[in-house]
Amino acid sequence: MPSADLTLAECRAYRPELPLPDGFDAFWSDTLDERAPGGAPDRRPRFDEVDSGLVQVRAYDVSVPGHDGRPVRGWLRMPAGATGPLGCVVEFLGYGRGRGLAHEQLMWACAGYAHLVMDTRGQGWSSATGDTPDTDPGSAGSVPGFLTRGVESPATHYYRRVFTDAVRCVRAMREHPEVDPARIVVTGVSQGGGIALAVAGLVPGLAGVMPDVPFLCNIPRAARIAATPPYTEIAAYLRLHRDRVEPVFHTLSYFDGAHHATRATAPALFSIAMADDICPPSTCFTAYNRYAGPKDVRVYEFNGHEGGAEHHRAEQLAWVRALFAGLPADRTDRA
Image 1: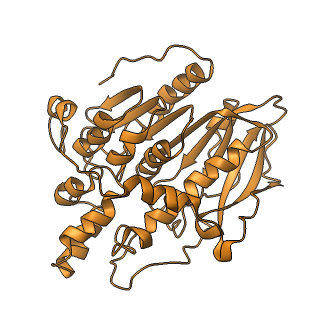
Image 2: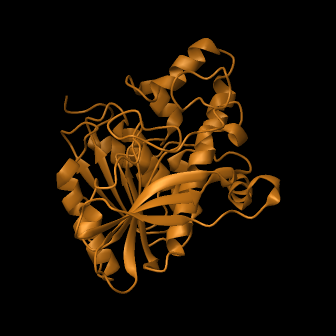
Image 3: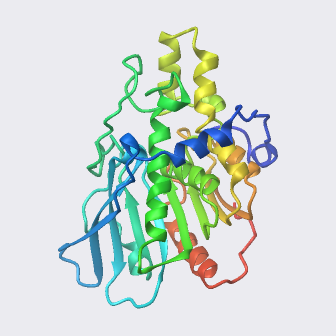
């Protein structure tokens, strides 16, 4: 299947009107200013070193106070014997994935960077287990999955909690004594890419952002053209709740990467796959075309949701190395 959506030329020119919901910035400002229950200050992040069996990489079991002060788990991996403040990559995970085990995902630490992988609350049933429950599951009327969990209001929606968790993980790494707070990049594949875009719009001063085949972009279009999960959760919900189309998309607009992209200023390296039937390329290009900071994109014309896979990891390694070295970015789109 050479294309799952619009042609590449059409995607590059695609700039649909997506009205920003009223109070978007105030909603997120208020959300991120919230403290733990009862007004008590949030607890400090914890980084407990574990014996992973690795010699060249140090591994730490991480717990960060996330939304409502509740702990969010993760793994921090750092090169053994490294000196001086390190550049840091904060990674968010794809739909259904959890943080996995301490000895996994070693690329960034082997490249000489601190690497935090955030567990996604309530997820971790697929190829990597998770350790962060979602203790506020939302409405009983949601369908299986996460897109409609708490969809009655932006205040109760699942991704409000997840995006807050992600912002607080970045803040925790900025305060880590071995990390250079000016050299933090956020990244993720699919759902992780959507979370990274949100963080790029919510956290000023990031060094960079790498959204990889990002989910949660131009959600109204995705819900109408994607034939495979997770976007199909929205259609399944609206088949049951026929009178809720407008309020559902209003709630989801607060979590749309296409809106968060307009607030982002950090340099960005996107990847988009033209045969992607999970995150349709026009939805990813919606966020890319609206992204307010310097940006590059790598387009994988004949790939599906796997995108560039390890070929794209090589692009990211080179991009982050140049970024942290202060070198000019390669601004040439590659298709």
